[in-house]
Image (cartoon, rainbow, N blue to C red):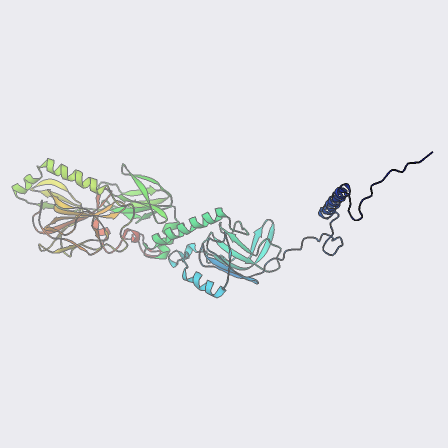
Length: 473
């Protein structure tokens, strides 16, 4: 049998087949994928040194050591730590690092508000100096304390305590302490600042700090505590409200740290003791003399012009009912002129033998054209010619109190003008129902005429005798 040999085609050396190259490419891709998976595995990935690293426990944070602190006021202060200076401008809600403690101290000191003002030193909390504070059944020793008011204060604890913070704050006089100031606490601090500022404003009106403290710390205060028919007293209360007095209701208006109103006494009020809140007002008897005047028939008929008189009275009553809601004066009241007293306050007056009225003003005779001074600071409420009182001026001194000037020959101010004590507002005359040149002068409290003699060389805030002094007779 004859064998046949098939011809076999041989590849040229060095030329791999297409199938071989495809297989090699697939293998390369698989190897790369395996390497990527290896190194991304959290368990199998090595660290930079090629060995497995153990997890270290969290390092303990060392507490900062406080060296000193100072609050300039209820918003600004600084705290010095071993590693730097911190300052606050919002009462301690936020503390910011400061580059220089010397410059910071200078800036803060120059911006001090002075909430512990000497006029209200009893509210400053200067006497509070706790040696320990009590926090959650634990007592912590105090290294330094600073109270700006009786309610708000800070303490620095002694070093080495395990307290949450080295600097603690209170807003309730030390009843509770806090390691930081919250936004709500900051609001209460701001309210405290407003209260202090209001107290400083009011305290400046009293003649002595001790009198201011006594009056402002009382729930009710009556200035003065003794009065007579035709007088007026100033009432202070710690809360808003109203007072009913002789059939009328008077609203207590806010001023300073309290609420005030004038209470006018009628000439008919009976003697005795009257409760005003938890205070007492004593009314003493006072005898008024009688005056007899003779006028011409022409003058007498002036009072028969009832329509003109009523129209003027409506205008006057309206003006005297619109008073500024604060005390516009800050100094003593003065006499508007140095004239001759011809008719004291409270005289029972008869004209041509007939009862006319109770004269609830002072008549001061003076030469026509004599300058008339404003008795104190205020706003001119009315300045015009009226039928009976002639050229007349009413000045609003705030809180329902007005001064009246009548029978002037000339008006030097107009309604709306702001005047100061001693400003010339007009000249003495004899206009209206008048028998000769003089100034008819009085005060009105809530549309009731009151004794001007109470005001001269003083203010209602000085009507309460200083502690240890004898009350006025």
